[in-house]
Length: 233
Image (cartoon, rainbow, N blue to C red):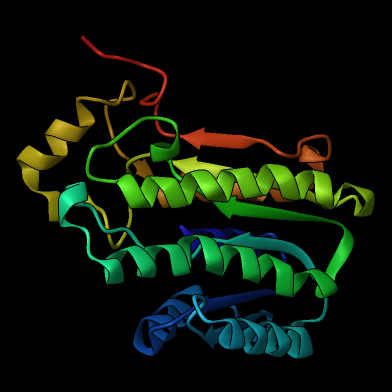
């Protein structure tokens, strides 16, 4: 989703910095984007404050100040609540919530008046999934952060919203990995009858970043094909 958003913003003429903690994957992503001088790939673990700060400083030197910030990094561990380890709990909270909070906090001195911040939450903050106790809690925190930041930053005309993707085909979650039966079982919960695409998420992020969304802040946009609001027979 982050990759698709980066591609969308590049197509719209933006200068874009992308961040990932795995160098080989970052290199592949940058190569596929083909952004030239308007693209800056930065290797960083966004669960660590010193790496967040270093990455933002590097982006500032190369790209200038920030008009759009998409805080997208996250990790999911899905298992019964009884089976969670402290390390699994800590890793999700460190990246999904702590990382998002401090990415925004440390970026704020670089963020322009009237900018847009979008946080990536999840459909699981709206509808319970038994195996996602910790993940869902971190994503609920992310959306609540968007709401409170929208108020805290209103005087600077910085809009803050979140997006909550449903079943989206990505490198980590896709129909090939789920298998035919697993994919069909999940699609049965989606009124649209299919998984979403990363480009469909990127479209919403791009809209929220644009002047067309100038009167929208503190909101969560669910991109799930109707799954959260529908109970199919």
